Length: 201
Ligand code: SF4
Ligand code: SF4
Image (tube, rainbow, N blue to C red; front, side):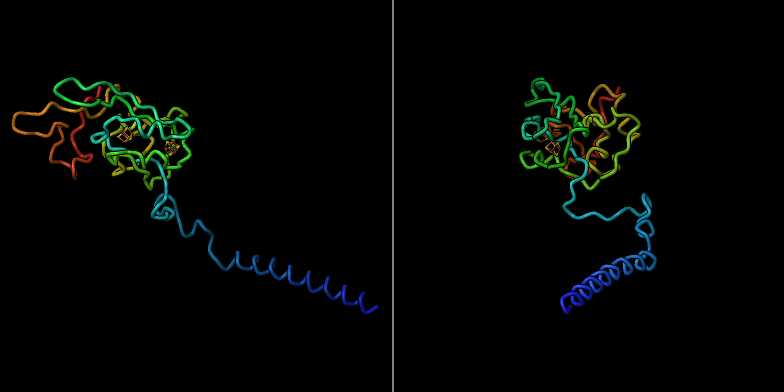
């Protein structure tokens, strides 16, 4: 008989404890404000962690077309189009640098092998597109500031890049005055995007 009462008491206390958790959560949902009250996207976007891996940042003016990033990608979603640079230039001219975001899993394995640090994961996490084709982003056809993450990777810029047949920047032959072989100008920081756009059709 005593065991029976103990089991009844245990059952009642267990139910009471679990109901308290339910009641507490129920009340809390009224006390605290909803998630959307804190972060009203896009005016007040959700803060992200410093090492967040968002859409890539790519510097066309620095890339040497070594293919190391494409080889490191486990899902083969980086497509690089390049051709030998005409003399007196050395190396390659990048004609296209596409990343297929329908396949990319944001692992960042493509970033570390880059010998010239021109590929990074950015903090951009939103890329709406007008079509599925918009998920394939050709960073060589995007404006340099957008590709390098100084401007939003927006669907309009991506859509506009689909109409461009040539890369927005190409290597220039060195001038007699001692202009750098990559044709970069003093605009922008450290030769990073901000340089004039060329090659648009
Ligand atoms: S983040 Fe990963 S999956 Fe995406 S392009 Fe880089 S290596 Fe490939
Ligand atoms: S590893 Fe870097 S330099 Fe080489 S192709 Fe990729 S982005 Fe360009």
